[in-house]
Image 1 (cartoon, rainbow, N blue to C red):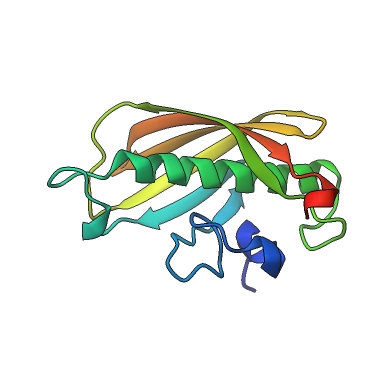
Image 2: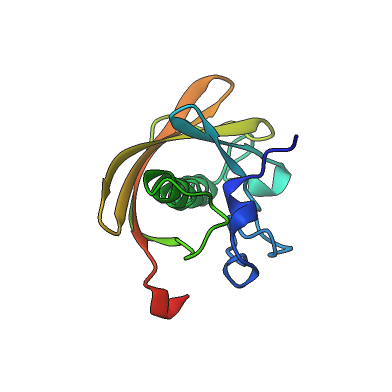
Length: 154
């Protein structure tokens, strides 16, 4: 049995995001999954994700935390409602606020692991705390405040 990533449940018209859109051929195409009460994304960096020799560009780190957070928010909202992610109506989230603390340089060329934990679900808002690690060390920490997209915009 193959487990689908959260992003695989997004309808086609909501699957073009640079960070997590499966239909964006030039995007990052991250994949996020439940791991118990946390969520996990693993992303393999490559040479063009460079900031300075040997290290990852900070904007990529922010993008990974951002899209991991909004994907986690959607999955958490479905879970809170007790329904599968492929059910109607669609619950889709966008970033209202993003905060990232860069704790140490992030090495280039190794898989990055992003872990998320839901801090709060309140109405149409979900707050997600995330860490980004490389080689077992936390390199960045972030928080995403995600808001549910109103039905009229879907």
